[in-house]
Length: 361
Image (cartoon, rainbow, N blue to C red; front, side, top):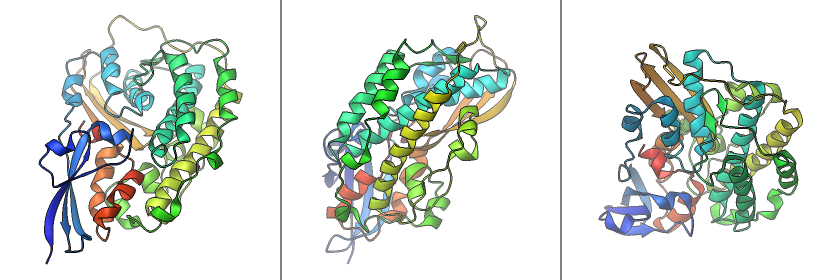
């Protein structure tokens, strides 16, 4: 005879009226928020059904966007996924640039691609740290480079409508190249035997839930915007994504490691082809997008980050809807958790990269 229990994940979960708190280890990025899982389990604690219960960290970002001008929106846009700040800013900036017909300078486009890959590398290292503590060394190294370029350690605020706030410091590109030469995933040992066969997400379920990013590609979803809808710099680089078919916790972690290697390669290629020139456009005092709507998207560390911007010709958006990867991805827990033992939940959820603020946007 089955019973129903509710488990909580993340900081503050014990205050949500749950039966058990799942600890994902120190410094796990999902621990900054909290969500619940309503589980149906057998007497020997094997999960037969799962339902993610979210909404405990509601950010209200989309409503806040509507009362801020486009420059101010960028300040908020980097916060819902605190590990993808640069990519979040970029998605909004691209929407405004396309609506206004701006031609962003080539150097800014290449620097944006470079910084996106450094942002991806940083995010993957944070998710890998609880599984392989050596990843913290690489995370600190890339975060220091992002801080040197932008002045921000987490919320970078480096994108601007029309390009970047300013050029990178003198000598920065050489320091990036030196750092990239030290990154080696072989120094990140992971106990894959403990993860093998756990939390399998079938390919058809990943498609049905709209799962993107490393979680989707670990289940055979061959989709990556860096190839399928590339920004100009990625179009010149000729990117091929890493796709695995196992769909289990081990495959998801392997995808993070594989994508780390890919990001190092892409960042190094950006450095080699980085052109000279300006990094931004001269803008009017007030930016007003023309009446209409546009949808833009970028490949953020966790998957597709999209922005649907609707404008009535004012200096503030009439509607700015976010398509965040974690919101779609977390729903797939309903498909991958049945058959998992409750005791294996920490291992499965540690491989399932989501940011709670990105869910409760």
